[in-house]
Image (tube, rainbow, N blue to C red):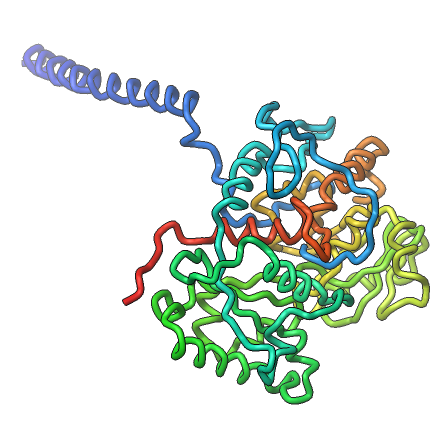
Length: 422
């Protein structure tokens, strides 16, 4: 009786083996197909248009107005782009270079894709600006200024002025990719008729008015509309306008306040966040890292030029403007923050020209900065000189400057499908 049982068991085992063979063949074939696709197509290439989050490194690796002219490094280009007066190199190795410590050297995630898309944007992108007459009671808030902007929040005025004089503006709303809400939160804040307490009601009333006068807001709930805000109160400013808060695109000016000296690193700013308080408490008596609450009497530009690393620490909000100043003066941005969306992160590889440190590593700040070798620092500094033109504002926009970079980011967020008017 034992033999038949053994034969039955052997037969069952053989049948299981036969069933497994086609399954294994199918799995193997699928793997070969998958390998072939991944090696011959761009299907598995990371999409550069996704919003990037910070990735903190074990060892250290905005949008702000710069009002002075300094020599700037340039990209190497071959063929011309007529409207910008620059040339474009479509060749080259797309693989990122790496330094000896593994830090990426290229400042772009993918230079070729960026240039290709940039040209498309420059040729086809259209924006409709809601019109307001020069005699409007709030013309100072809604229309471009007739002077050269200055101050911490000048980016708002630079952008509005540049956009209105650009080829991106269309008078035909049916061909517009996006719609611009031209109010200035910084100017509303200083208008005695509005002030901080009245901004929320002003914006709520503004959205009510354009949604009843024009059909464009209602067809998407404001999803194809955008506004620019460089002031730290921008988040609370739209609190009463639910649709603009949830749906509209907000173009913000990044960075926070810092000043630099000949020290290893320097910070001066208002004590308006727990992170800043921790930084001051940890390093206020240090001889290499000089941190202060409040502003200094020394010239700001000289301080930036004399510092190796400029500390960028989140304050009350994340969008007060200073990172561009550090880049403009050749100072390495040292960003102390968690989960921070950085300017132009879709395009630029921030690990190649900045130091990113988690707030939990504030006590290790000196160790992290002094561990950076001379060669690493030189590479970071060279990359800062290369990318700083992308953060530079000009009265008349120049190709690849801050205005065009913002336009490119907006172009990435346009809808590929136009919603028809009902």
